[in-house]
Amino acid sequence: QAQALSAYLGGSAFQTVMDNPVTAYRQLVQQYAKDAAGKPVDPKIASQEAKAVFRAHPVSASLSGVGPRLIGVGFKRIPKFGILLGFSFFLGEGENPGFAAATAASILS
Image 1 (cartoon, rainbow, N blue to C red):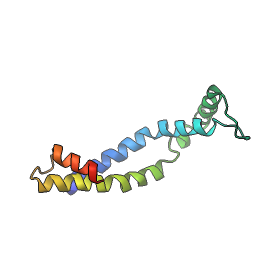
Image 2 (image 1 turned 45 degrees about the horizontal axis):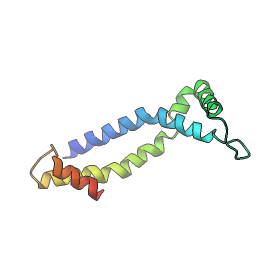
Image 3 (image 1 turned 180 degrees about the horizontal axis):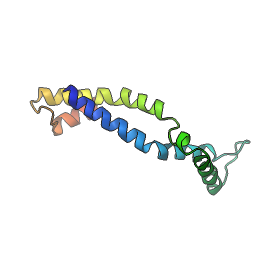
């Protein structure tokens, strides 16, 4: 069970790191969507500003916020995968959770 939990958590962490540049870009566009006075800015300008940040600092912009997101993955996924594997164990499914275990994990977490 511990190996399956580690594999699930590793997959979630990998997905979070791979999706992070897209999430960081989206957040930068939202950040630049308003000017200093709080008035909306043309979306093309906000997108250009975000692209300029990514061009100037590609690695740091891509990894922006990945630490808190990985902590969030732990807090969110450990209970979900624990419930999933716990129910699959009690239902006799082993490390191959079925529909009932997945439904229980979805409802209870």
